[in-house]
Image (cartoon, rainbow, N blue to C red; front, side, top):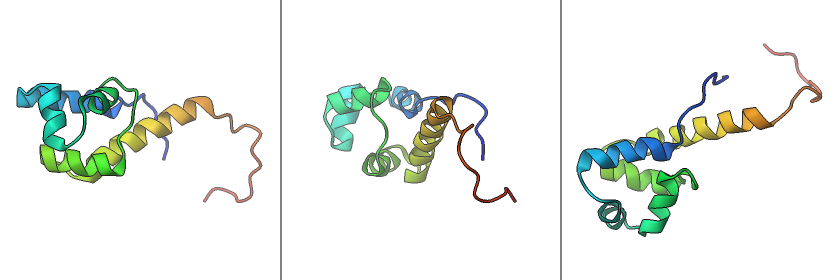
Length: 96
């Protein structure tokens, strides 16, 4: 599957969820059991969503952990596709 657009960092989506709560970043960080610095790193696109964080966010915002993991996966894959040159990669199997 090829992602043809630049997906947002999951922190941008998380920021929208936080804004809907009318809570501060500090309050949300405390509420999900992490420190404010770590939450800020995610919100500012300097850290990703781990599986553990996805579970916390899913519980806190009524989503699934898979929602957050998939956002991170799409972002990471698109970023990697911009950097990796596969033009010289040897093909071992023909595409189906």
